[in-house]
Length: 143
Image 1 (cartoon, rainbow, N blue to C red):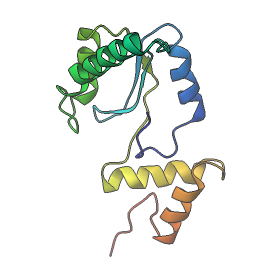
Image 2 (image 1 turned 135 degrees about the vertical axis):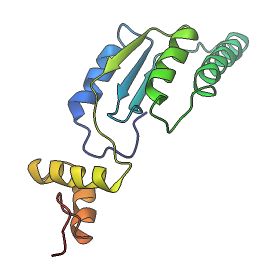
Image 3 (image 1 turned 30 degrees about the vertical axis):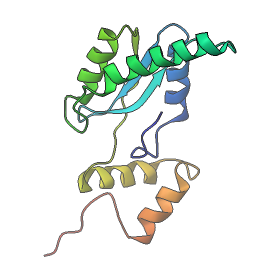
Image 4 (image 1 turned 60 degrees about the horizontal axis):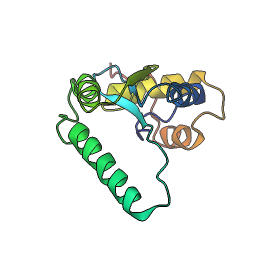
């Protein structure tokens, strides 16, 4: 899963995360504010045997809840706590490259600056939205 507040996340970051899941059970991509923009989990295929499938689904739900129900989301500790909770629940955790998310007006201006410097095909709808609201990288200051 990828968060919606990093529209310019490079495709290479996603490819890297998927590659990490070849050898790890989980992957997290940190944000600069202590959260994360990406989480991936690998779980074995569930066989078409109803009783075994039910057992494996319950086990997966327990492990996911044991991880994400205890993490203080929306804090500067979310990434580290999620990483610890994943490891404590038995997941082997790998890291995906860090990427900024958008939580504040300053973050939005930084996104606008990145998009101005990026190729036109990067986040075109976000770019159009920013332009329609005249959001620019640097705040305008009154004299």
